[in-house]
Amino acid sequence: MTQALIVIDMQNDFCPGGALAVPGGDEIVDGINALMDGFDTVILTQDWHPAGHSSFASSHPGKAPYDTVGMSYGTQVLWPDHCVQGSDGAAFHPRLRLDGDLILRKGFRPGIDSYSAFFENDQTTPTGLEGYLRTRAIDALMLVGLATDFCVHFSAVDAARLGFAVTVREDLCRAIDLDGSLAAARDAMRQAGVSLA
Ligand code: VGL
Ligand code: ZN
Image 1 (cartoon, rainbow, N blue to C red):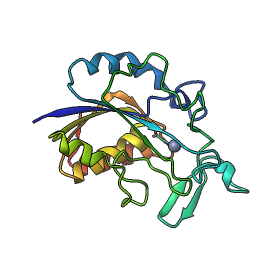
Image 2: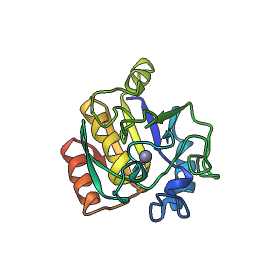
Image 3: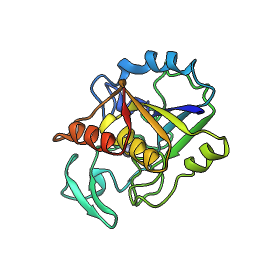
């Protein structure tokens, strides 16, 4: 087995003080940096939305952050404006090691959100990450980062469905936990065959 480390969305907007702060989001930076030493391949993902993105509550008159809205591809949670391309909030946490092999940006199409590093929220538009991993003969993945119940969760489930052996290091993740979303995410990951470590 050749295992790669995927570091999900360790960006300023998901850390305390950011636009969509995940409680304790910055606590895991040093542990993730140390973990990188054990991997030949490290991939970082970066949530990367254009201004006015359709996942922002501000783009939907009368809606507030954390409301939901029906999109062509299903129900979408609406977020505060976050990770706008080129902004400080979209930048990686200043202590995060950036010596990984690949930075994969996602969520850049105005009309569709992308929690997963593999497919956008329509669950069919690929990001290309699967091809990158397969052409490098990587068949196992360890996932860490933010947020456990959204981008880590959907990335882990998609990776397991694609046939990768997937481990989520829960101690190096932090959750948003919206209406029980963390418990639901843990169940869904387990059911997909993801190892929670
Ligand atoms: C994320 C909500 C919106 C995440 C990204 O990284 O988990 N969550 N965009
Ligand atoms: Zn986002």
